[in-house]
Length: 257
Image (cartoon, rainbow, N blue to C red; front, side, top):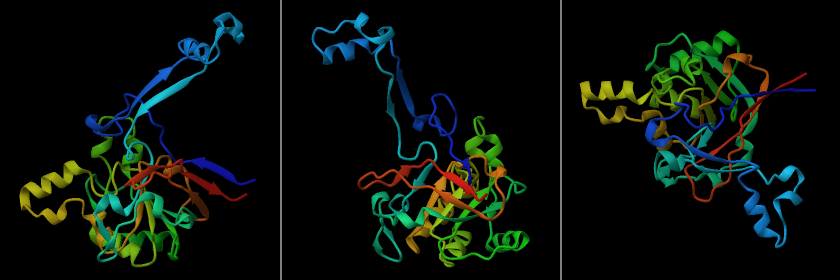
C-alpha cells in the first residue's frame, strides 16, 4: 500500500499562522448546545428522547480563502496572466495540475527573507539528481516549517522572486508550494528592502510573475522535512469556489510501496 503523508496545516483558532487581522474564527457547537436545534426539526420531540440527550456537533467558520493550507489561483496575483489573458480563478484551473509527481527542494539553510535564485534552484536540483519535467509539482522546504505555530512564523523562511519563479514556469511547472506563509519572501523583509530602495517591483514579485506566465502556488504546507527529495506524488486539489482567488486544500504526499 502507498504511504500517505499529510502535508497540510489545520484551520485553528489562536494559532499565529496569519497576521492577526486575517486569522480564521471557528465557533464550535457541542452535542449538548444543539439539542434545541434538533428538537425544532421534529415537533413533539424531547431532549430525553435523543440517545444520551445529545444533538449534533457543528462548527461555523469565518475564514479567508487564503487561511490554512491553500492553493493560490493566478487571479490572486493580478487581473491578467500569460501576457494579457484574463487570469484564471480557482474554479477554472485544470484538475490534472494538482495530482502530479513532485520534487522537494531543501532550502532550510537559507536565511529568512532570502530570495532563491535560478542558480540556487538548479544547484539543488543537481544535488538531488532530478531533472524537472513539465507539470512536476515543486515544493520548497524552508526554515518557516519549523516555526509554524510561533509568533515569528509569518516572518520566517526564504522565498522565490520573479527570476526564480519564471525560471520554474518556463520549464512547464504550473504548481509550486512552500511551507512558508508566502511564496515570496516574508513581507517584513521585503518592507525593509522597499524602505531602502523605494523600488515597488520588489513587492510580491514572485506572485506578480504570474502576469507573464500563469501558475499556482500552495502556501502553508507542513512536514516537508519528512519527505524524500523525489519519487513521490502530491495531491492538492483546491476547493471549488466560483470566481475565487484561492481555495483550501488537504495536500497529501503519496509515497510508493
